[in-house]
Image 1 (cartoon, rainbow, N blue to C red):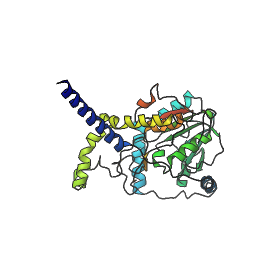
Image 2: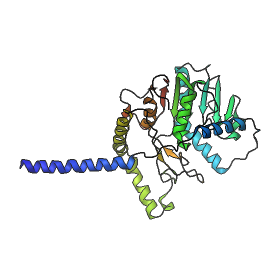
Image 3: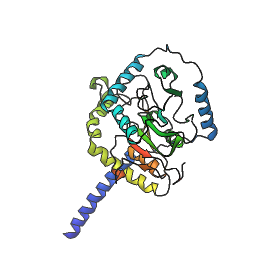
Length: 314
């Protein structure tokens, strides 16, 4: 009788283990940046430095896509209390009169939060919205010297950057030792956002699309998300014991034709713990991760203090 119980227990344990492996494999972020040479980084940085000197056409027409994008972005920013959170960040770390940078500053609606503010965006057409300093540039080749800023923030940008680890590296490079970063990409972007499965009616889809839409409530449940992501986080934490980690993420196919919902145009999906681990494994400090960073919520900003002298910076 005892042996039968042991056999049954072994079978159940094996099934649970098999299911855990399947969930882990299905959720594991395999992608990493394609490496950029120093010459490529330097050329891009020089290009965006020079393009800032060129005149901008203030009469650039907005498309329906642009307008819908802006409307959804403004609605999402209000719902997430972005302005209030950045004000709290600036006040907490006494950044009002210190040099700060916003990466992916868009129309500059946060430019008055700090006096010594610089906004950077890849789009030259938004320059007309600024009365503070604005620079055209890319997050992967920031046109600033090392250690230029006491504070850096970026809101819902890095999910749109094809080489996000290079952007992390650049953000860390321009932040001074003991400087602080407010990092708030759209973490863990849903792979179904590009086609708007969550907001479009069933009638928009064929049979396979209807199945995808029907599966979303199950796949979106916190219990399912947590079950899939904790084994991944554990494996990534174990890997970080060997030294600075590579940033791993899932590549997405963006939709640039129809902006159905937030993150329809995202090119990658990064887990918040993966983002925190990239800094932690380089000797930096996460100020809002708590005592158990692996249990970090999947959404919300990271507040990172940079410690450049402690570990490798690559």
